Image 1 (cartoon, rainbow, N blue to C red):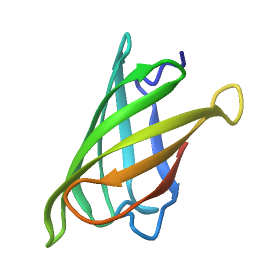
Image 2: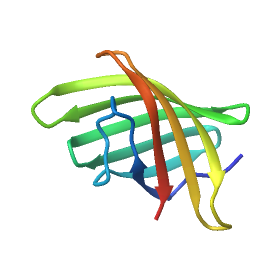
Image 3: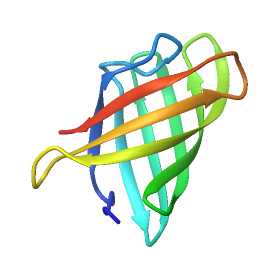
Amino acid sequence: MINLDGRTLVVSSTAETGIVGSGTVLRFIQRERRIAARYSGGRVVRGWLVGEWIGDAVTFRYAQREEGAGIHAGRSSCDLLRLTRDRLRIIEHFRWSTRVGAGTNVFDEV
């Protein structure tokens, strides 16, 4: 299990149905198998991920307030990869619950 506590990641690519973008920054905290992150930037005013490790993957529920579009939410499962000894990549497979759409986002550690 990779520890995400204290890590900061940025969005390096997003799905056509995604809202996060190159200006979105995610800051993680982790306590044992529980994980949370706050994020903002780009079209996202404020967002939260709340999830946990299940086996070798991380699953999240997310909610975010968007510029001029209200609050939207969904769920995702993520694959974590080591880019280098010190840097991680998260590949997020998401599905909206408040709007139509699904896709994949990629977050890279800074």
